[in-house]
Image 1 (spheres, each protein chain N blue to C red):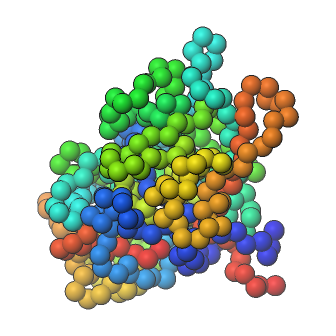
Image 2: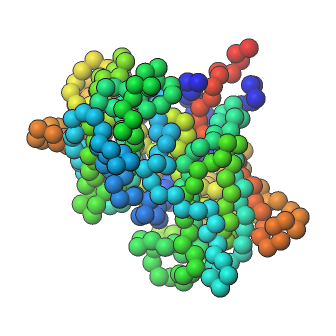
Image 3: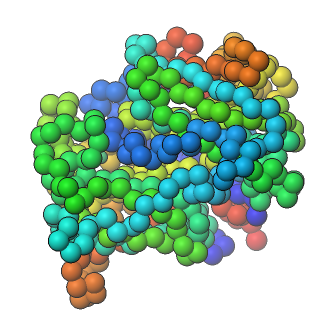
Length: 184
Length: 232
Ligand SMILES: [Fe+3]
């Protein structure tokens, strides 16, 4: 099929009726996979998702994708994937509650080759015609993706440490302190 | 093989702010989106998300004395990458209204009847040829509570996982020949007419097989390819 070139299908909003059962019980807990515990330091990531007028958004879907504690992705494109933690899937899904809060349990990711430790985050919701993609960091550090963000906005991608194993990452879709999203 | 992800042709994707869709100006970024070169992190992704979720069969039209009301249809969908290569083993989530235009969801009001034999959601995995099939009923149209004459045409929602993070897709599939397609604000948010046409399923003239359902075919293309165009 070399030479065939198909155009990616157009995106559309998730709409207001995404089935609640698609946010499976436990899908926001990456520390356990198929009944086994992932290696590494367990952390909690939580935050609030707000629209421009400050209204918290309920039932908004957040998904994350990250490397394991050793900085390895569970994917054949990672040259080190054979050494990936078999008990870490790296993907999770959460929905926001009535106050706009989401919550994940995961492990602190290691640094993948050439990158600082980070978590990929995407947001899907009614009124979002395209998936919004951003990246959570744990500190301002040398990283090619963080470097692409205008200097004044980098801090918005750094999760705030709230306790020994707890980080807060608020997502503001539009307006003041708007979260930087990537042109993916 | 590592995936190559290229920038999109924006005309083939919907605008983020849609006239007459009141939530869009409140929820979409005002600042420019930040351009980045994809790294391994974005060029990998959950290949086995299906292990974390419960699958639900692709036959949601009911059986025996518990048949869903409506026009029985078979959807035959193929999922390909930009090279035309099948995307096998991909997690697919679908949901749709019943024949009366009603979802099973707390957000849907009671203007249209619930069909107790129709739940309206399936979650499955594509086969090696990138194909999946659904036996369902044709969804009904429904009015949007903007109360200004916007009705959603019959459509099926899909959420799909490709090979990498940047392949993730949320889309909707429409039906051919529906008068409401021409005025739908979501379908028509895609500027390019050919790209809009590709969101509409193809009606397959009946052959007697299956004897009881109309057949529609559809193709979904996820981002990513193995090679860059023009390479020998
Ligand atoms: Fe819908």
